[in-house]
Length: 375
Image (cartoon, rainbow, N blue to C red; front, top):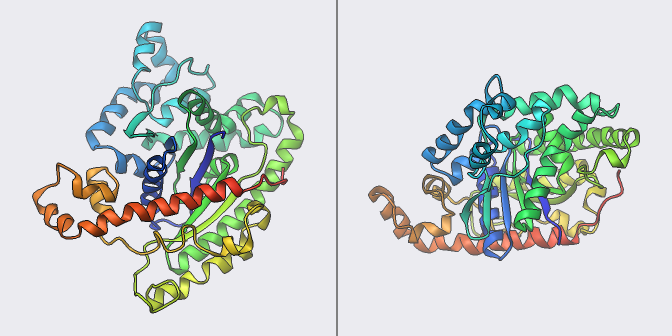
């Protein structure tokens, strides 16, 4: 199976998107899939979840000269080929990888290795300077419509890099974490990945986020159709052949109330949650989910597996940079956290099966998804 690029996205912050991405990536890896997690959120939340501050700062500090003015090519010119090869023998951020396309210079001849954060799971960390690449995308988007080579390269570079890493490391899935924005960076991501899913908080704002996504997808689809008509296939080797697919949704962080509602959540939360599938049907084009039945699309991915709140468990997971289910066996818990984790050991461990159930449904939907004919 060729690598599948999946984005976890909602036009609404605070829905647990990064927590879901982190645990989905770990669950997929534990199910035996080879996974690459890519942090394309300029706030770097996935990197913060997976790495210590010291690790992140070490990577960023080493790259500063390549990112800041006068930029990548100037910093590269100060190094011999052997020195630059040595520099690229260590993990680098996604912005470092994208910088040559941003500046319009030559591609990297050898990819820096990704960070191994678990068995079968690698990470390309983010960087706060990624807004610079978004600015380049905004400048060049219109130039792509006249076949400008650098513009086309800039639009397709994220997908090209992920595919190249997948070829070198044999990934089955790439999980792309994003910001909640509908700006140019996420526009590029969502129109060049293979599929996406939407995590929703049980509130009014997530419903409006779904509507905004649907409206944006319709506009972006029309733009891509036009773009594909004016540039020949030979000029877009790393652009996708089909428009992005939609895998479905999950409700996330809902308050659990056993037996009080069909989804065992508090009545106030259920009032909003039950509107999510209705809004998806109304606003997300059905053609994006060919191969999935209407019944599947109305049901949350994984059923209730990850639907209910984990209380403070995700905070502890972020603090120690491991999935929730690994915390009871984590050797370096601070004394103040040990009592909480040990007392709730079974609940922490149970999250493993919950996320594996969720991940298995993501895989099943991805395999069932048929390429749409929108392009």
